[in-house]
Length: 456
Image (cartoon, rainbow, N blue to C red; front, side):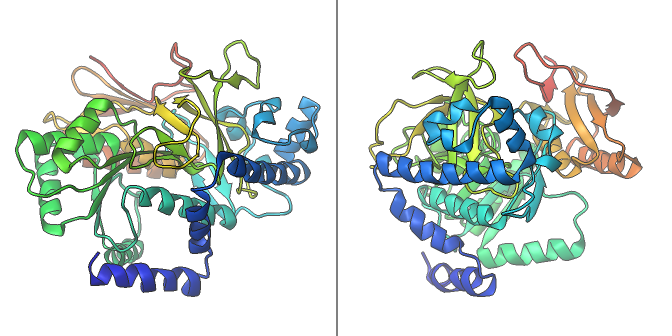
């Protein structure tokens, strides 16, 4: 790391976090750097204590969970550890959507941050969490990214989705200044035609990033462009992938374009980083100091489900141990995964691992010129419009025209429609888009709503 990088990592960043913002994020990080080497029994004991504290709080102060305990005929003290969580029914996204207000704590914590999901299942969810949960989330991210070589102060290129629509000039200027201080170079990965990809290659050459963070499929498209055009003019650049599944073929071409240090991460907006790949590249370590991640099979197993067997595909069900403001307890994320066999990783960490995460492979759209466009474009924008759009689905027809089906709320108006039109005009130039307002969007045969569908 160069002089500025060391200055930022060891002085400016700690000064900002500890003194200016008075946040304990780095204290949480130091704790996590120690716990990552503890035995599984030690980690499970700490996790069990945090779970008991959460359940007592939720039963006493969160109406949504108090009723669920009563309906199940349970008291919090009857669940002593993660292995007994299966006594509680799973919370579906529809359950969470219907009970937004009642999921907020009435005492013992406050909802300091509110957000909405990106709607990868076609149904954005409003949720919230307290500041203590935010500190844990940021510390977990810093530790997980560090396994890939990331440190604050490194030059980083973020090939990521667009931010909130209609952001004011002042907010954009503040964000740009913050990125410059952090040496973070952001490029919108929504459009991925040849000219767009060439600009990313030129940015890599000019900014010389020491690490790249990207949507998995965006990074794969960039890598294919680099390999096909023989554009690589750099040594190994570690790549951290997220937001979408990283397929084996994607990893292979990214290794060719950027070197062998490609790392997959798995997370969600509701709880952030759930699992991270280490340098052993043998599955993703679960962030168990912050979360309980279950892989559950529900077919014929009732509302609580059962733990998936080794090698068996199951639903990802997550419990956020530090979100007391608006808890998530046994919340089904909508993703599918396979848990890795028990046993410590060769890296020395005992955290349980996921061998694969099967969810969130997003279809790729095409603009009028045939350029590839990330199917997550609408998800990212609609995450900021959850108050006006209950569910949505994007269908691209064989003639490349698009039908955007939405289930609007009472607050959907002309301004919201303008934002949607600006979105597709920006990313899908020349494509005719029709908005259809519908009462509901049916499930597919698999039991999920296909949010982005491309007719073949």
